[in-house]
Length: 164
Image: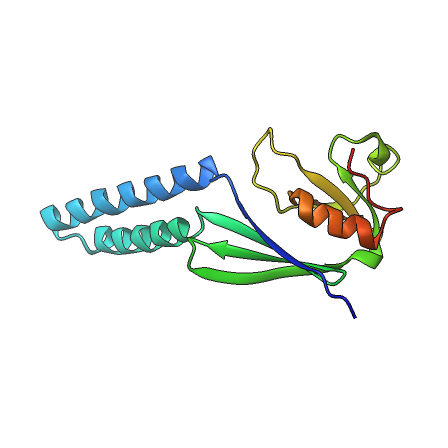
């Protein structure tokens, strides 16, 4: 049995809203902390602690990377937070894919009208080469595999895979 294996890391572009929320939470924490030290107002202390916790939680979710792992006809996607925590997100069987093609490919024209759930596991960069695949007639997945991974997928499912 010949097994194919490849892994790839893709760093997600940090969300501006999440960064702004993190900064706002830390600012509220500092201001409420100063108010507490000046007036010994317990409500200000509670607000400072809650804002500090919220800022910490937001900072843990700012830097996200996706790891694509292709092992013998299966694509597994993990999410890595701050290069510390890893969480398995999902797995896809290549046999159950309907089509896989670049985001701008004409091969996807018939699929664009479908009302399906779209999940984006890409970097979020505008000019990155993103691929789209439709999975089991109910999901549209956006991701950024490299050429080597796409060649392995093309070898397994040549009629479903388009590289144009």
